[in-house]
Image (cartoon, rainbow, N blue to C red; front, side, top):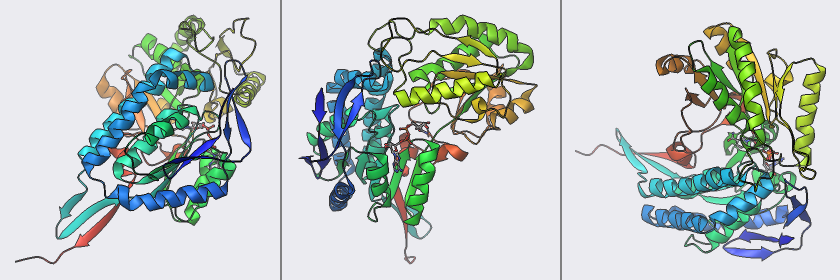
Length: 474
Ligand code: NAD
């Protein structure tokens, strides 16, 4: 077992005497590594260090910031194999998908922030005012376990590109990529204190960070439940707040759409990372007259999702992240079966999978619009089919949950899909199977959050604006 009992503050690793937390291998359930649980005292040290570094990093030129961000991207690239392995083991996503989604994509994001930092234009004139965008200050970045390096990158790379300084608290459930990132940053030219990293529990380190008077901004990604708590604490200190929360995203299929592609693509989105993806399309909303055809397609497609060891190249779906997560998903499924919601199809678990947190994927439908399967984020491999009676009904169902993170629209033409997408309250909408765009703003309406991440929009979250009025000169 590999122990990593250190936190990173003011450009140094601090070995601390603290309780430890065991991180499990999702595919075996066995201990994989352990981390130390930092305390509120360590939060004070880390915030002080970030505050001290702020004027230095805020004064760095665009070229200097860009150089450091590129150095970090280089460091991640050099350790890409190791990163993919630790994330596959901690989270359970198949290794070949981790390589692309969990590692290559975040490296590309660091590079893109290096580019944005180099082009930064933080001053403009509006009438007789000089308008200046300044780094927001000290940022508390709190991240979840499902796409650990990606979520960290969306906050840390963007904040550093903007000239802000950061204290990161990664998820205790999948912390290894954060430790590797801190090692890489330690070897870069980033000024000491501009990035600090504390491993620990949300209830202790997370809360202390959110409450700290010298933290100017809280950038949180996690569940809506924790997000509400974080928002309440942060509002007491009138802090800038960004919340990337949960979802219950719909795929709306209209008459005339390519039904086979729509069903295939929605199932793939729903089952990616064993359903543990915030913007997963977990509700498939199809014309009532097409329900039987959709159910038949799903019965054919589901067995192709071979559940297995994330390290095997043939595996399409790994385990859930933890026993707690498996209990949560099992409870939703059992309740739905008890409530009489029909099961369309259920995947199989190979017999050799004895350890680990494996769960067979399942598809329900048709489901009534107010049931838990439709209204609540399950965060597991569970797809729910709903039926609609035309465009207006489909839009009403799509907007019929408290969430609004993502959606998909499938129609006969992109023009029809755009017209329908304009009526859906969600931050990201893919039309007719178009792929993810890492540079486009990402974030939620309603209970899915506040603010936007990724690309330029993500960088501007970490800026504060100031207007200087000048007297007109002759
Ligand atoms: P979580 O809310 O349990 O934890 C997220 C982070 O918050 C962790 O680092 C945790 O330690 C910390 N935390 C917990 N309690 C805290 C508290 N009281 N104060 C401060 N910090 C606290 O979420 P999770 O289980 O790690 O992640 C899954 C959730 O994240 C899902 O709901 C998913 O939809 C959401 N998510 C959203 C996005 C997005 O971009 N919208 C992306 C990924 C995940």
